[in-house]
Length: 495
Image (cartoon, rainbow, N blue to C red; front, side, top):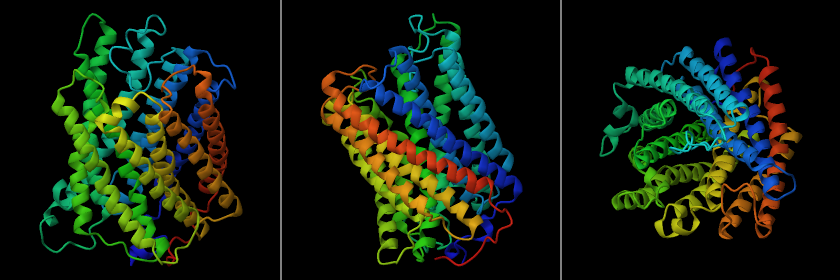
């Protein structure tokens, strides 16, 4: 049975696909380390352990936000591609085009920030990029926006290729999502979870990317002619529709690794079920309409949008998570799971996703949002599920691929040291943010009051531990992927 084989033949990477996957994986870990170093510098500067001028701080904050979100999108796209290609015919050119456009976009953004001085953050809220009070030029703003457009075009190409391949195999996206089994009928036990999750991501994130393209083009028009005025509230809604969908898609692409790999490490099947299909169908709708929970402080927003944002927040986050967590826990329980790096990372990812959702749901509650929204509670919750949830899912796949080339899942002594270092650093780092939010420390501030700096110092220590662990992961992954024997025997029994 293919799903119970640790390294099945249909996951074998021919030379071209292997090179493409290596490009994604190695580039991602290198970029993550660089963005984490920027984060460490910012937390250290807020604690006054080093001096960073405010203008440079906001440039770094812009680079860190855009870089982290973009890189998370890139590496989780590789996760989706790796598994989806087993079930439908994907074109390698689309996967490579996405990578090349990502690199071009990243270069535009880096140039805009470090050469042009752009510092309007990754959210590029209209009309700030154009009205910069001489801090940066319109050209710098334009390069930043063009960088986003290139990244979005690349991802759109990949999604359209995937959507066409899914339709060719399953007839339409609804059948791929399993809608025909929601109310009855015998579910095909071989219907791939990877296809269900990928279809949901394609539907939701294509809409998000198109919304992003609209607002990016309008912003570029504003750069060309600053006298043209657009409705700022509509622009903000488009930005958060795009941004929310893009970063949420990374979770749903990355969790495919858990669905595909966990049964191999527990030795138990992980069957598809009606509640599973319902949860993904519901999330497909909820994730599209939940974005107003980012705009609860915008009092010009229609009240019904704010109420919808709060109500849908409870459904959007919990449905897929609960069904996934329940499935994973029952799969692991008394399984005698083999504890290696991929399995440790998958369990950590489930914990990080769960723990990160709680403060997110709280922040999506209007009464709490009025108090917490402009505090460090917000970076606390999204760092929690990205650092300890999404990234470990992607790392689990990369470590698993390294294992396929070494005939066994990686589990060296250095791995066993690097993992707890990453976990400890991640917990210190994220709880420092959440505690700062509890203390009402304002977010996005280059300079902090002395009373706030205790949490800054804890955050900097946590960030340092994470960076050290990631430096090890980077070296381990680069050597493991680039030096591995491509002709190594691929398939052998699970566990």
